[in-house]
Length: 199
Image 1 (tube, helix red, strand yellow):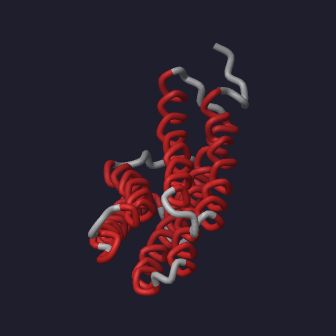
Image 2: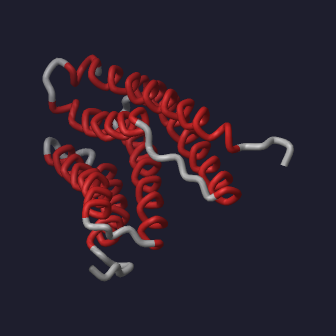
């Protein structure tokens, strides 16, 4: 099978990039619309996350890995994670959920620092030795926790009881923070043997 730059996995990655601003726009500008102002961005984010899970599986199963795919897939992932976290933080502030936003800002910082740190390590090690550490189980758990957590944060206002005390949101924030932090530490341990501080 001929491998082209615009195969199905790469197309899905591009679609993910395009869905991110749609998600942000619906979340922010539809925030005052009851029910649909929550359902629509949740569905858009769900579709965005689905493309993230689907493109990699298709690329590996049908051997459709390309240089363009190696570039666009992680870029789309970072675009999705960073944009969604910042958008939800702004959404909380605009909705007047100040305490929720105050807690979530620390989760966002942990996620941003982890993404920047791991990406930097990958670039340095891959650039010098060509070694790329595969995603660990902790990394996969981190990704799932962020996706599930994002959906929970969005839809919680529709859930009776939890919409008032935000127990689900606080619980998911804790899970997101811990899985992100420990997966970052796991990647650091994996990459450290390939880093020479004297060079």
